[in-house]
Image 1 (spheres, rainbow, N blue to C red):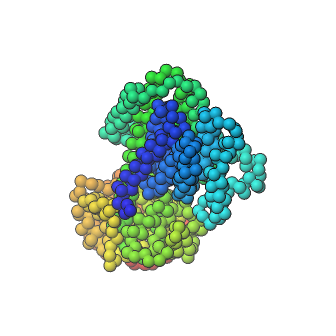
Image 2 (image 1 turned 120 degrees about the vertical axis):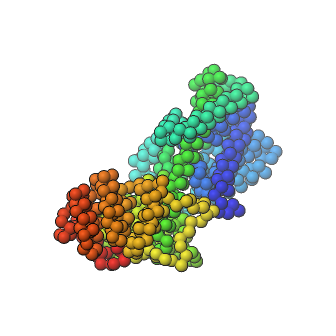
Image 3 (image 1 turned 45 degrees about the vertical axis):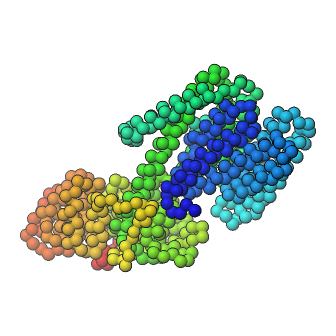
Length: 621
């Protein structure tokens, strides 16, 4: 229905977030019809709850928000059935259908099914209905039966789905230890989601890191929202004081918090206030919001102080969501830059290729998430369950989907209905540390790259540049509906194209690109980005320019010395003797401390075998 347009999905997720607030408000009004002011406070706090930061992961979040809407409506209709007994069975049927659809849509809220008896008790106590627990059980029975059927079904299929239910085995194996651990974890989670989540709204952005204009906009949002909320709540809503209501809210809030995180604990998943574990806060923000308002009502007597505090929390939470939005925006900009540079450097790849790298500086996506866009960019047709391209974070997958760094090692990954099968022999090793340009690591030229992460040093011999198709029938293209149109060429564009030309030994093309790149207002972001151009100018007998760039490189970063020595040793051995060359070598010796060029540059012992195998291919030069 929404197609592949990102804005449609973002609007859907925002709309559903707003509807959850309305649905919760409606359900709470059904429970406490005489406390509309307090219920509105709960709905406001619920709407801007700061512990859940995945709002902008819209495709995934929208289905869980949809299930939350259904849960709130089901609870509201359940209470409605208790207040209108002449419609009891009709309304109970509607409530059960809403609950069923919600539980089949998402498992996140299974734990909150256990708060139904608490809500039923609040209503029948208010009505002073006879029967006590017997009456409670009679009204709860239809929901209990439905929940048990779904719980059993979910446990039966547990072995065949991603997140298996592990809590039962733990309780059977060591009941006492597991029970104590479970209760301790629940209490810690309750404290984090209720107290710590709201404490973090008082962490303000730094103008130096966040940006002056964005910081100004943040404070504007906070002040405007807090003021509007204060005026609305103070002038247009008012309940009579009732200490009993605060106690009821605290009890319901605590019960909701206690049971809310159970589905995650059952599957052995953590609930944290950081990505990606903060998805576990979705079912717990229900209880957190009710508990917060219940405590506010009990502990603070003057109404104006309550409203001032509430307004401040709402305003700061809105500001926190703005900070979160900027964080997602910056993360997305990085992803776009990463894939653009990847497409510039690797116009085509042989099927079965794997990109090996360390964890990229992307906050909201792992290598699992990045596999999809890479295949959209490089795979012209996927007609079966096999996907041709893969990305592997070495720091996450080495020892699992990639058992070890060994020749011929198979790389296997399952992506729900899709699968990838490849080999370490068909891998390309990348390094990207912004603001530096993306680097396809060369097993010879980058053997002395300064401060290269250890895992990439270990993987470097397996960087097979033969997997790069230099002139594919159709070059890699970023889908414009997702990535937008390409910007004007920047320094990194020319660097990536020059590095590609270097791979082919097309030194004249390297020089042509360098002549344009060094005239840009943009400039190299890392000293090593001059290396292809140093080689290009040297191999086209422009020795003065090659020396000039070398001096710039070593002046900027002294750690570049081993890499420069290796590169100049290669230049020395693969160029014809001339007076200009000897003068250039003499100049290099004055600024770079290298062994005698005639003796060659010795590679570290741990790189020798793999690197020498790669060196035999002339196309790598």
